[in-house]
Image (cartoon, rainbow over all chains, first blue to last red; front, top):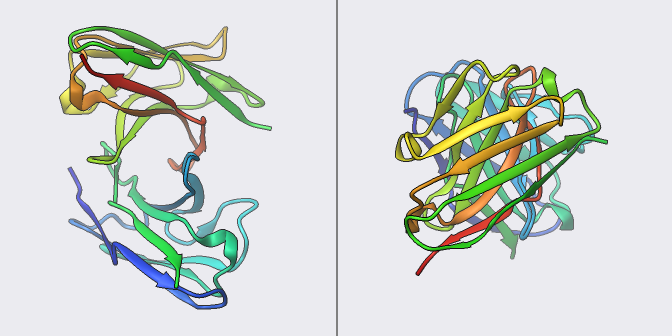
Length: 107
Length: 118
């Protein structure tokens, strides 16, 4: 199975900050990388698919980049509703696998 | 609006069985691959089982192979997960998840909690 490693595991930030989360795959996955946001008590919600494509309805402050083994999720200006846990997921081959998550909380 | 709603979770003893159900609405259910994904504090998010649009192809994570069975009834817009010989490590929130054409998990149900404990 492909291992997905996110960094950092957690970070503290302020409203308005630019936030960057990294995800590394144990082997090359092209751009078959998705990002999800999960708030407490809720299911994950798709933000970005195929590394850089914004899911419908997701604010444009979210962006994704990368290919091969290294990927990045960027929040250009953190908003109060963005405090959550973020997960990457590879869909290059089965089984799909997830990163362990990055928790973004308030500084 | 796309909706997925799970049911059937609960408390069960080790070695017991449960059947989870998921009803979809607001989309053409038969057009989509579907998954069960679980989440626990210890293991994070794990894809448990996957089924093709017509049910002709299924796959499972290794630790549930032979114990869990995924199935679907497109006439009822429903997905199922039969779980047998449950273990403590199967304790998790189980999500019914739709797969998009780009193989992203684009719609999730709210989840149902399965607790395996004596």
